Figure (spheres, helix red, strand yellow):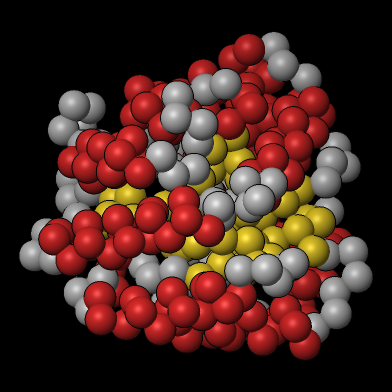
Length: 277
Ligand SMILES: [Zn+2]
């Protein structure tokens, strides 16, 4: 398999903090067949860091895109959104600027700031619709997966339906039904290294059953390193492990040709990028 692979979600600033230099990460990514990486912001500082990096570094053979947004865990302080959104407007037409994120809802540690998170998420959704940019959404709940009791998915689906925003659920950790609620609204579903873990049957079932045309892959580096390299800090090059796992999974479940699965995921990433009008 030597398909072209795209890492649709990595935090390069944090990869560097985890001890992998930018040069090393780029060289490894290219050697592994990764042709594009999307550098995802969690706040204004990381967005500006990636914006500068992409402008300064020339990386032939590796396309770099970046985003700007406020992670839900930082949404207890929504007052910073104004300057962040001004930066988004100013960057809108840069060719290397992809879209808005990551934003979303995270009820894992505490639900104390749910209202702030919702206010921030709604503002991101509205901006993405106004500027015709894709949105990258993070969802997490306080409990282990319990079908029918998934609060952040319900809340997010309602808000997406109202605003008609288009984007991706990144690092998907729910089941088929939850994913389909977003797929039916034209969304993409992105799988991280979690897909390769032993206890991930519900996620694997979703990855096998979902329409192939909605699927993306990512690292979320430096977190969530896939098997068989689990234990090391994650980096964009490791997208190939998740992509190949997914291709094998669908080959076993549906008889799909693994190379064709990888080619389709690549096409999906291009369609995701093209949500920016
Ligand atoms: Zn992330």
